[in-house]
Amino acid sequence: MSERKKLVAGNWKMNGSLAANQALVQALRQGVGQPACDVAVCPPSVYLGQLQQLLAGQTAIALGAQDLSQHEGGAFTGDVSATMLKDFGVRYAIVGHSERRQHQGETDLQVALKVRRALAAGITPIVCVGETLREREEGLTEFIVKRQLSAVLHLNGHAINETVVAYEPVWAIGTGRACDPAEAGRVMRLIRQRVAAAFGAPAADAVRLVYGGSVTPDNAAAYFADPDIDGALVGGASLKADAFGAIIRAAAVAPGAPAPAGARKEQPT
Ligand code: 13P
Image (cartoon, rainbow, N blue to C red; front, side, top):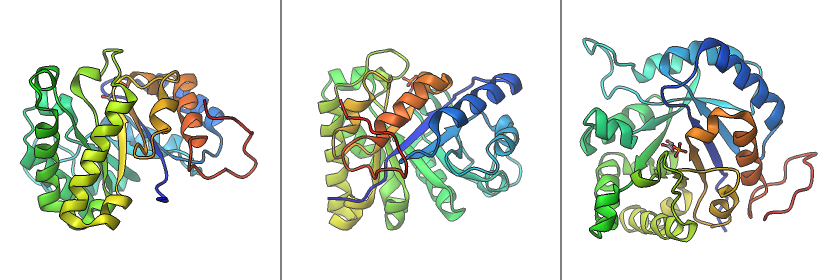
């Protein structure tokens, strides 16, 4: 049985304001207590400084970014470097989200280079992979996931156990049409097999795989019950303290989760 700790990360996407962020973090800090899983929030980059201050002095909620540049620095207008993120205490960075692949035309190679940059800076990349509805309907799910993963493994395989891979089927994002947990688990095992084939069983056993796409308090426990699903990357529900807190609690009571000291007893559903 692996010792992988679950991770619940909130991707705020392009949402928030100074006032709304403050209220959300305050409610979250009260709601989550000292969770038994890793928790991160990923605000828009302009708010990282504010979030660093709001999260100061606590260890329950880590700070994450939604993207980073593949470059070290220089003439890249609008981009943010890994070193800059480190300045603000950033611990995680989402890389290769489908919205960036789709709207910013990010390629598999760019994603792999960004992962390398994050790892070099000591930031844990959360690399997103996943197929579109059309690709799924054409039977290309495995092909797409393997292709996206291969680029990352090719450049970063040596550090795969410091990398989080998020399986986010594009058709499940923001649609309310969550992927069936059994199917998500099947794709996770595919990813793990791929890592095992390239870097051996210990690496495959160490890499954390999280699911993203319409995760809610109602369906979270079903994902976390799968031994190969190590957490969630949450969009819409992470903007509501109650919903995000409930998802975090579901991860904390999932099979294999360590019991937090003084935690109230809850039964997995
Ligand atoms: P939703 O949870 O809103 O479907 O978004 C998922 C996502 O894209 C997280 O990165």
